[in-house]
Image (cartoon, rainbow, N blue to C red; front, side):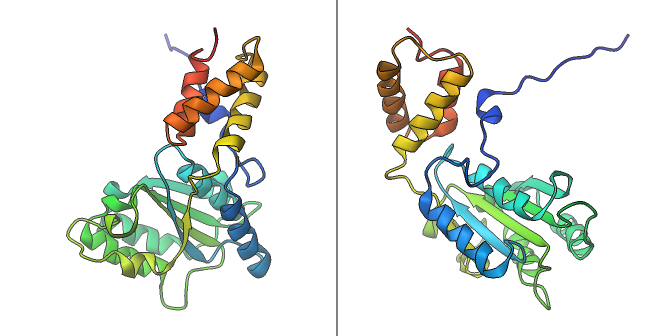
Length: 230
């Protein structure tokens, strides 16, 4: 007898933005990416490094960039700690083969890139800057919670050679509370999680956003658990 089940998707995942238009706040980021796309006609052919605190939307932004270039099946997401020489060689061979599909591109998302080993960090340079350049239909996106000198890899004294080859994107912390609150309040209404006093609830959500330092995922989890309901 086989068992069947329906996967449960967390509210945060269901409300995860899939485009720049859906992303709450982060106007500088949106302007930066739209400028690149309008100037070159694509976000492909380059690498990006996204920095921000936990829960602020680094992976969400990485996936938005990836979907500009590739169909979902051609997007690979990996934790930096799982990258080794064998994996990089496999990816190097695959990166020049253009996938079938509507968008015809591929995307690689490397999360928590500060967890790279020294050798993997050096080898990744050959993916970002191969002879002749990266194919215009490919994109690599790194995410990290670290900044500046904190963004060092194990056994590496200088992360500059890797990150200097990337378009740097830093998620803004200041001035983001209000658009985040409005997005969460809309989710509360849509999901039947809004209390009778919306103004009071909005103030509670704003307080939670500020206390979490903009951790959107944490506040969505609070909303889903009924934390803001009286």
